Image 1 (cartoon, rainbow, N blue to C red):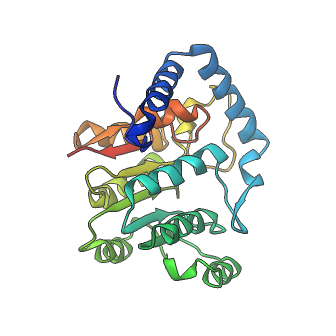
Image 2 (spheres, rainbow, N blue to C red; image 1 turned 90 degrees about the vertical axis):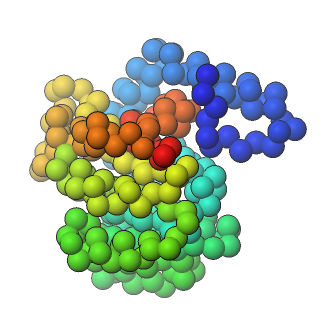
Length: 253
């Protein structure tokens, strides 16, 4: 059984840690629980459940379970830089910034093709604004990629969250642009890979993605030629309800 990287419980609590690992490993093979989780996630999407939440006052369009995973990853990695594509209302970048504030170092670089003025104003006036830098433009545009790579230069620990346009082509381009910035032991988390797992009769209205054309298919293609990354199933197995199945990519080499 592989020890989950995110388990940072002190060694004095080895019995608790072992029990937790065994429980999570059991979830991996619990077909009934996993099927129920998938059905719940599909219903949550239909009802826009993930739009119900915020982080420190900013709307955060994420499942609460994924927010929990994000804070665990940030605390474990202790990154000098977090690169996030997809800003929206700013809840996710504020979450990242607040964790960095607790750690006492680091910056979040939020990239979005459109940062609406009211969202920019709210983010830039937020108490965590000193940990946040916003870049407006397509995350795959050469000039934006150059800005991000310049910000990552010299950083020892880099973490990447990809959550913008969810087409196969775009996510694959983001992976090619940013995944190599991730430091060994850190993560590139690709959100909304669950699109591939939605029921066959689910219709994505006014969206250019769907089955066969989504973040998960991009992840699978990227991993075929990048063995330095592995899917950390322990995160997904712990959450069960996540928008990022096969999307927690840990850099191992």
